[in-house]
Length: 302
Image (cartoon, rainbow, N blue to C red; front, side, top):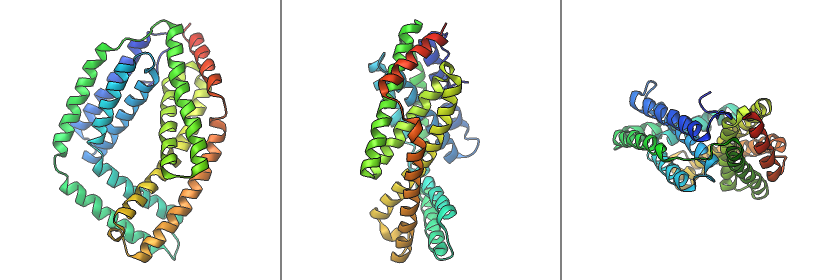
């Protein structure tokens, strides 16, 4: 698989190989746009997230390089976000209708959906400079590929394993903290922080899958379930932010009240689902995880 590190191969070469693939695929989809511009942007942003996950995994061994390249990839993604984010709000309304629609609230929810579709289409039509932003993103990806020549990591299995274990455990530890904070506060920002930490943990699981294939495969499945639920919850939070910014833009007072009631019910269900999923995924101490990963990687590299 293109997003998995081979334990028996030099770490520098493996990280460079994986990063080049992600940059190349982002460039290809942005240039060709086989399924349309919006989908191309969505697909490219997924590649950018994978690059950021990769850089986070190895940053203890190359902090300057990883900080610079992570920031560049983050900035590329930010320039391509507006229309895709508007599309995501339409999609979350569709999921809300699927899970919460009743005979009583059906009309209100579909009315809000229609306004979100109009908003998305208007933003797409009025988007100024998007083609220039895409061209700039392609150029930045090419620069990122060139910069990979500067990367130098520990290549001996023991040191490489310790580098990867530190990165893996750091992200895992942050997910532990974020989970406890979100459960305590219930704040949208804290649930969003948890979403980010689980997504990075999921990427690290995939990158290091060769060290412990069966267990990593199970962790990937569980993290996917949690990430999907947290993504839906984040989209609901973004919809609430849009409502707060301009309540009348999406419907009248009665429609918005109905929408918010459905959103609150859906968010509560998602939070309960995430807590149940993560109960087993985040059950170990960070130091135990780090030691285990280092040992597994050393053994897999033999």
